[in-house]
Length: 521
Image 1 (tube, one colour):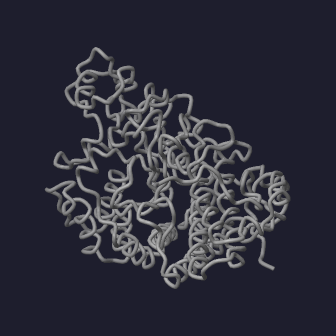
Image 2 (cartoon, rainbow, N blue to C red):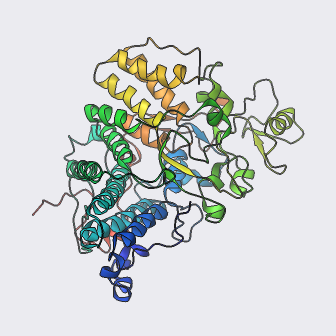
Image 3 (cartoon, rainbow, N blue to C red):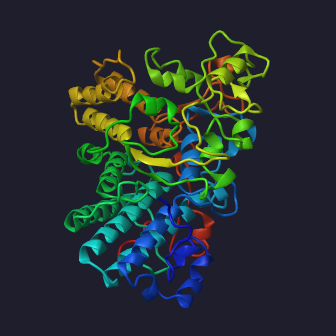
């Protein structure tokens, strides 16, 4: 099983371009190959779909760490959140959310570049698949996959560049540039509501086509979209929109056929190999590695990358202390209780008992790796420096969406049942019980999202949509963050946690003005 090492989407600007710079105007691929050749047969279109999957696991912009979806998870979901600690003073700009209102920043530009690249790929497939020679059912399935890629990309862009839904005046605030074809001309901003309506429309059509095609991805093609991926995207998008009926419905549909992983897989497989509950993910292998650029090269405890050896990723002390002692997930992190370590950074010298015990418990921890209190052992890699498959959706997330949706729909019993299914029935915590209601129940749901999904790129996104104040404490204050990173960030600060549209878009596309909706013609 391999994703092809090239993107056969010749004839579209998406091969090396983005919808946010003057590169838009480079049409060399079209001239050299031609759209007709790229989409001549359904076999060619399959290669193009495969190329979309590769876009999500590729390195961009010549910058280490900007590695498709892994970068979004690490730099945009984990680093600026409340529960993810790393001893990196030099990254305070990103970790403390100080670049949201800097449109010239590379951090501001990257998600826009990456997701519009994926959208551009998807648009060309959607526009031309019907012309391909092949069976109609195959065309329907391929178009459904492309629509799913596009809907997912717009959903992620809305989370990063737009206001949280609860502050959006029911979506009547600036949204996104909705590019739905191969036209690369100037185009203004829609409203956020229009953006979500397009996401829903794409998913509705994708689901219809998945069903009418009768096709499904192959068993090992977890890296390609299927109908359950469309359901999962719908569930997450609806949650972000506070559309709880749809969030509940589609979360339930998404996890059908994807039972929770076993406790052995949960504790020892290291979230680097797909299993029964991975609905969608990214493929990686030793012969198709991003080396030091990958998500796993930034987090996997057994990686030989300097980003891990010198700066292991840790859970916040305050979250760790909320995990019940009966919960096996507590073992994902190094418990320093009763040990000696530096209480300004969390580092434990090699001579300390904490470091010795950590190496004894995890013999694949490299001898030259630094040990920290609360360091993570949830994520590992299959090969160095950072080879590992990356999950995008899994059924545990869908259960947590169900719990939150049930709560917001006034069904406390349903929310409690979803939490019990995730925690007790699964065996993650055989002593777990939940009879909480009201605000206490919502806090319980939030707590278990923070525990279950830690390190998977949800931290900042969840806190933004919940409109929660981010609070980090240093050791003197009862936490474990560096003093420079022990900050409090309110929902109304940092441009309301909204990245500005990058200048590489506005310099090219004069129809875009940050904060201005362009009426539909």
